[in-house]
Length: 339
Ligand code: KG4
Ligand code: ZN
Image (cartoon, rainbow, N blue to C red):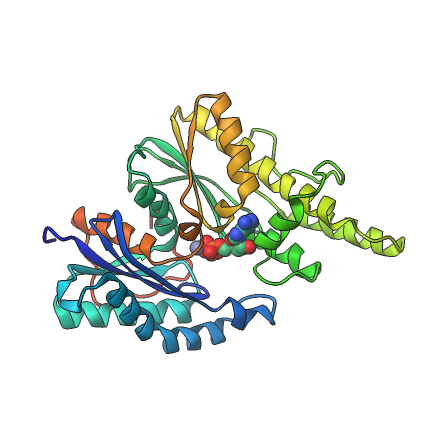
């Protein structure tokens, strides 16, 4: 790595075609995201085949735009990083092929990045004061992982969801309510004016014996509440319903993270991933953690959901630690942290 430490990051694991240029893992020079949300909205979720086609259409213009915004050329880059999993295989292959071709043509290193590690680096990128050991909660549409990090870059998974991811639960209930995809932000907005105690909802696996999560019982209870209101011919008070549903998720996440932070004796907690954009979760977790003298970090909103700056940052730190990936690195849709 030269002194400039310029990394082009590429992210195509789901429905965002994204490219970013980041300097020394911490300074974002460009962060371009072409979101396909509009394309998938009418289907109520991401259609993998359509997502791959859109990635193919948009990947090169998005990379061009990132380089132009950063005011750098391909010859200025020191390395190229791309997400190689977890995610939708068709999308991952597009980003990987683009990254490897550029790196190969320029004869510079290529680094594959785990998408979940990317979400964690969105936080590290934004906050220089983050220091291990720490506990990290990564909550997105595809993942709900509770991790212990004895040092930056080393992950011990201490809990994960046994069924739906937290974001998936938000999206599924929003879909039944007829709200547009992605549902998390919609439910969060509705909940602002609601009474969180109006509809008591179950908290899965809350008893202290496991750090795993389960949201399927909550989903069923929410669906039952909706059906009961319908059968009685009553209008569901949407704001109260959204607030009660959101509160059940936020309560479980907060209690488990705080328990882990105290058991592992850390001083810092990281919140990452799309659901980490939820303002109620940010507020509640921060307030509760402060009662135990624990500090909570979360990325700025634009870095919470999928982006390539987090991939460039994670890629930079992997490269700086001596990691290089071969040209035949394949997409791994089910990749886990630590694999
Ligand atoms: O990290 P992300 O962009 O993609 C994945 O890696 O899955 O996360 C997207 C997920 C979606 O499920 C979306 O509904 C959820 O994050 N999300 C939210 C909020 N913003 C995004 N969930 C709750 N509240 C929000 N404000
Ligand atoms: Zn993500």
